[in-house]
Image 1 (cartoon, rainbow, N blue to C red):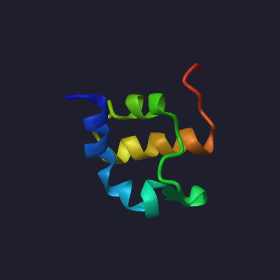
Image 2: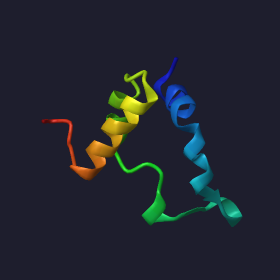
Image 3: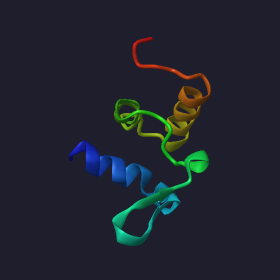
Length: 70
């Protein structure tokens, strides 16, 4: 399975926060943007099968500003 498909399957419940506006432009509420980490972070997070554990590490990475070099 491709990473993009897996990303969609894992995080599809968040797509409601991205709203398509007229003429194909995206209107995004940046304060409530559902994805705050880099693509590489999400690639690592998707390897975690347990949703609660994955969510824990996602929130920790956001709040502690983790980078992938540590």
